[in-house]
Length: 397
Ligand SMILES: *Cc1c(COP(=O)(O)O)cnc(C)c1O
Image (cartoon, rainbow, N blue to C red; front, side, top):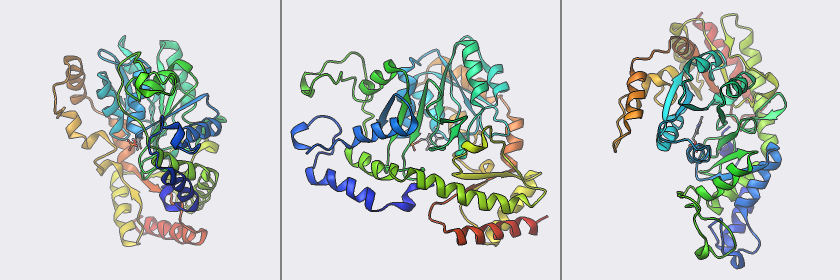
């Protein structure tokens, strides 16, 4: 990733279909559109590729989470369990639903720690939201067992693990619902866009209606539609969906390139005894969009960052020092800097969070380095990069 590296003729052809008839809206205008329904076509492609009954496109990965939580009936008074290492969209979508985010530790998979999840369950818990961070998956069997035991719903945020799988099933298709982002830096991009996947036909119907103002989508006269419930506008446009159609036609190539490049770098770093790798619950299912490794101490991982700069290595993160992905730097969230008043329930939950510490995650995230695996690198370039990365790490040991 990111998919924009290999933007080309396939995307241009799909876009041209839309530009030629000028129907940029995904619904209606049947007579004008010359048979082109790019959003619908991308939804069918997702259903086929992910072996799931329903896919609903949305305007972003964040709004896909909003829609998924809404169709699951999550709202005021509910709690949603999420990891403390994720993207800010996780708590944004929970807060937007009116529910309270409950943050728990990650383990050496860099995703939800099932032990921490079970300890955080209260009578108000409604959903467990694992985030398959940096290309690889959470312990889904354990999380599913916890959901069954406590009668909870499982919502997979698979935005960073497009094309990965767990025990033969595609990530995003395993929980009660799953979400993807197709923003500009994801494995396949629409420019902006997202999707909700589900096998639950009630959720699918409600997602279709909720993401378009609650319109019932019965018949072809939009003006005559009724509204079974309140909704919002979380629609994707035909232009964005067209780009996604071009991209998804290359999905197998993208994942193949990621796996090749990831393999070359991992092999080079495996020769260094101080380097360890994140645990992957199903190694065959790693989408390989990132390679995450740990140094024995935070001090050494900081030194590796300096050495990478010296050896001309780019495209990596140390999330402990990053503003977007780890609770340590989410001051706006911890201090609840909201433009509008939040419910007492949420405020109480946030007071709890202020006093909460995450020693296990602090240790893991501070020692972690996460390398982006690019699609545009040739095999020769990856081999050269892998050798320089290994040399950089050895230089500080
Ligand atoms: C990118 C991302 C999102 C949000 O997607 P947008 O399309 O940018 O709104 C949500 N969760 C994770 C883990 C992400 O990486």
